[in-house]
Image (cartoon, rainbow over all chains, first blue to last red; front, side, top):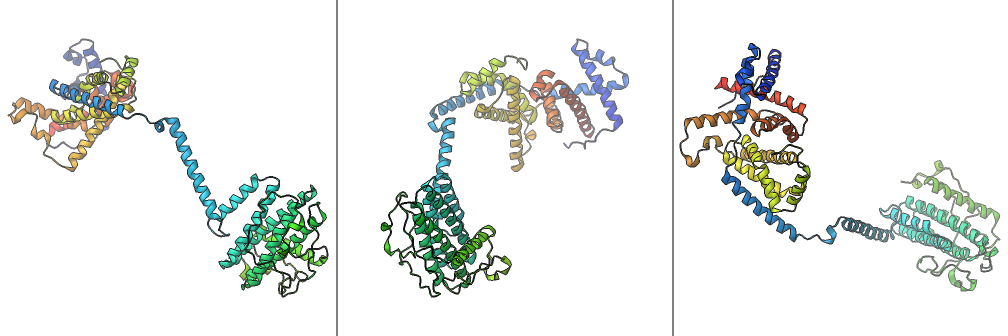
Length: 380
Length: 191
């Protein structure tokens, strides 16, 4: 059998329906109070009676759907259900709560697992980042690791970390050159060398003022070693733009070396005697080169302590620094520092002084105007 | 069956025991609600066999989900069982839609395929008409009508089971009756 299409009531029909519904309520109330159905219906307006009667039939027709369950079915289902409940109780008893199912312990175990995973992952990342250079994906991890260590370091520890940073920069520079890295990588390293060295010199001054010359000594060694390595790299490098950057770095380091030499010379009882710096180095690189020892971190393994000069390897090849440096040379080195500082701040390549001579300090004139930089030296 | 607010503490304790799969507690819950659940199911399906199957599914699901029941009154427990019944019925309809079978009404309710008296056939036909009309109501209207006329609940208990206040139940009831009347009248005309 198919049902007739249902048509929504019109406004008139709806009003009539509402009236009939009101009548239905009244009739039901009368029936509930004991009146007979017919008597209750007669009390309503005649035109509404057919509608009310029809509506009164609806509950009866719906009630015909009410069918109680058979006793057989009820008993059979109860038996099945209770057997299932017994089985569920036994199964629940077997599932004894394990210690990790307890809420607090479960939470603690989860937190511990996360911390462990992060810790292991973090250590692995820091370890993997050790061999990176600027531009590598993990280099920021290395930078962050250094910054965190610096944040927590105090006293001599700061100097040790700065020395370690210089050693890292040295290794990174060598790697960058070996990998034929872009000049911008060398530029970033230049900025990082400038920051680490400046901080080292500042620290050395503070320690020196406090009567401890050892940090200045250690810093001088590290800066000198880096200086020498960079000079050698610059001599080996065939790409002019990278070579210029390396030479600028060497120039800056020479100025810092001199500053450290002065601290060491003038400072504490443990300070080293003055060194001599050649007033002018021939363009051929007549400056004595350090021995071709592998680059080792310049971090002293022992705590920084006043160190007799005699303990420093005589063959370290450290050029003698003296106050006999021409003032113009010092000014030029300071100028290079300014250039580096600018590079640090702006991360843009500035024009490099003419470095036709390996030690052309006296003639080097920093030209900080970025616009004059050759396009090949701009960051890519 | 008592009122909607009766014996809340007693009912909560009963539910708690049932959560521990206490045989007596679950048996008590079953006996209290079987009549309503079966009638409810029977009002939605075409045959007693289907209603029995649906009722069984509802109680088995209740046993499986007893840990998650939040019922502090019998009305809430029944409302939950009716909700389970609605879902199970919808599942059965979906299954039937995917695997069409011969209409169950054609099979009839006669035991052992014995011929049925004419009066019974007419009554079955009448019930099928009403059931089809009921299915055309909204869920809320149908719940109210079933509670009031199939289960015999008063307004208050109906309101507790459908989760509405008495006024809302009255409105739903009137609209549902008016619509049922129209639907059934239209079918009479067709017939």
